[in-house]
Amino acid sequence: MKKEVVVIGLGYVGLPSVVNHVKNGHQVTGFDIDQRKIDLLNQGVSDIDTVSDKTIMTLKEKGVIFTADEKMIKNKDVYIIDVPTPIDSNKIPDLSYVEAAVKLIIDKVKIGSLIVLESTTYPGTTEEYLVEKFSSLGYKIGTDLFIAYSPERIDPGNTQSLKAKIPRIVAGFSEGCLIQAQAFFGSHVTAVTDLKTAELAKIYENTFRLVNIALADELQKISDDLRIDVGEVLAAAATKPFGFMKFTPNLGIGGHCIPVDPYYLTWLMETRGIKTPLIDTAGKINDSMLDYYLQQINDYVTGNKQTMTSMTIAVLGVTYKKNVADIRMSSVMTLIEKLKTMGAHVVAFDDVLHNYHHKSQEEIRSLAGKYQQLKTFDLVIYAVDHDSYENKKPMIIENSQLFYDLTTA
Ligand SMILES: NC(=O)c1ccc[n+]([C@@H]2O[C@H](COP(=O)([O-])OP(=O)(O)OC[C@H]3O[C@@H](n4cnc5c(N)ncnc54)[C@H](O)[C@@H]3O)[C@@H](O)[C@H]2O)c1
Image 1 (cartoon, rainbow, N blue to C red):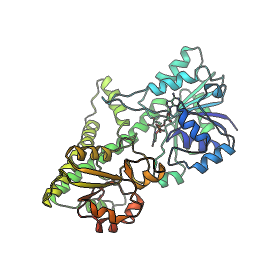
Image 2: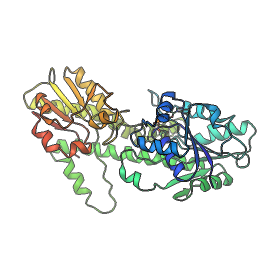
Image 3: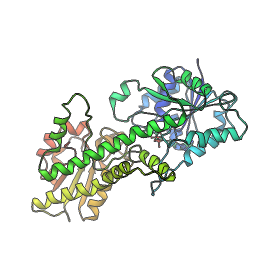
């Protein structure tokens, strides 16, 4: 049945969520507190590289409203919350965005509204920040209002994940809430017993990745010491058709999920006096990789009778992930800063980021297929294997005086 849906937070999760709800035949309003983003969307411009400008135009033709005006989101059937859930500098969860989103809709919901939190967070959040808040205002949850948690599993840059319909986990505060949420999300939904189970399942998915990437990082160190090619080891292990999943070593995991979400869990367990040594160690290994690779690069340079001080270095690829125009929490950016403090003159190239931002990122240049310009640098660090670089890798190597590959695995 066609519903009036509000998506709160139009970022990497919220904007694709608008697209999906429109596909499912709903009337959608996209709300964001960022007026600049709303103005761009209303001009038909997306600031999320996974949603094209053309798609935004189609959404608008289909009646989608993009707004920062609170009055436009009153009395709707469904409220989907897709706001950030970051950590602070001490790796403590910051739920202020969720709190603000709940505050925003408190006087907007109507009797019968379904509210779904999709942001990643620790077990207990939906109850603490939504159920308790609305209950304290006199709403009977499961009768007057329906509250559910359904984590988003989108994987930016992973075309497989965009093509396939990703199965979804859903939990409701009560049976009634679950029935409403299931009816809204339709097929590809796995219902779980309660809100905390769904919240923990999502955090576990990303913690699983952190722990396994940290293991691959350790394999990198082991292989380097034994003078074995880590890429070949991983490729060989990956020929086993069962019981093995390939993860690759990393300069330091970037983005806003894997370097963040596990700390929601470790923080929660610490407040409960429970230790999480495996996750803690995985986090520390991840944090150690940048300095490890920096040392490896330095050894390579000195092994070639050069010194990092006053060297000219081209870094190819700066985004946190291959084929994604997102620089947030990118370890390559930290690497560049460290190289500069060592006295190197660094020029960053990223054609994916550059093309996407329509040349507005002056400090990050485009290689634009002119591989010969790499000859002017003492060293080329190949940091992100965007398809456009990977396809021309032999030419990049051919034009490099010294070439250090951070993507070999
Ligand atoms: N990015 C991913 O790949 C991904 C994947 C799965 C889950 N998640 C989770 O989804 C959530 C959202 O992540 P994201 O990557 O979309 O974040 P994002 O930073 O890309 O977008 C969040 C948007 O929310 C807006 N916002 C902040 N406070 C608001 C408020 N009070 N009202 C309305 N809008 C508000 C911001 O302006 C921004 O546009 C997080 O919990 C994240 O962990 C992200």
